[in-house]
Length: 338
Ligand SMILES: [Fe+2]
Image 1 (cartoon, rainbow, N blue to C red):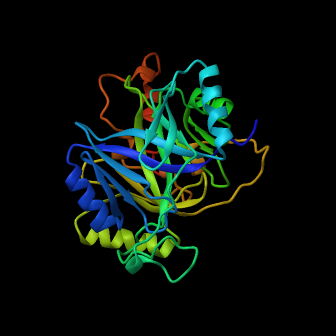
Image 2 (cartoon, protein in one colour):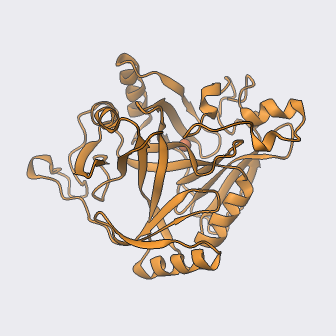
């Protein structure tokens, strides 16, 4: 298969209070607003190459409205659309803000994905232009501000089937997965379109609600910046949900916190680079440190929340023995696994 996708280009999220979310992104994450169109706000990190990477749209609940990947060529965009429709999913073509003719579809687990080739490269205003030719604009003056968008992690009711579909249809490489210690049930997997461990993650969704997001993530250049960001967030009343620590899978240093809508954001840095075209995904278990490489804590239960909030009993818990239910809900709740 030709290389169809190149990288995650933007995420569109919804917030019940767009102004509060945007203010937070500007003041505490270090993003800047580039467009406001019909109540939708377009933001960027200082190092993003294109015009925007985060779009905040009004909505009743925090959610992922769409996740966008840039294709590797105009031909790849046509080919990707063909492959999606051959897989039985009908999408639609539309003209997006600065992304030209784009293709949008809802995948089998309810997640909207937007594919585009055209982009508008960011051109900084003169006072924001960097002295370094490759930088889209000056480094942010907000402490620990991320350089760029990094990845998105969604929730789906069948982790392996989700990974297989996105691998077979769109060519994502499957890099690793985690199964429970207690039973051979997949609870997490990471997929990538490039050399990173993932630009698309998937956690097991025990609810009956499709299309949910667990978090999305930004990249900072160094661990020091991530630690400074954690410190400054704490000082300003924004608690750290989980971390700073290092994931076993991917080996990135991580930090999770929430934006005002309650949606979870992550900062990432470090980790491996993997260029192996025939990489075969290894299987981890929580007890091996898949989430926390140091194996010296437990993951907070709040980390199991995905967005929007789920309804009713968990479908995947039906028929599962009691001792597995806890592990399904939070495989990393046991001391030494999170
Ligand atoms: Fe993540």
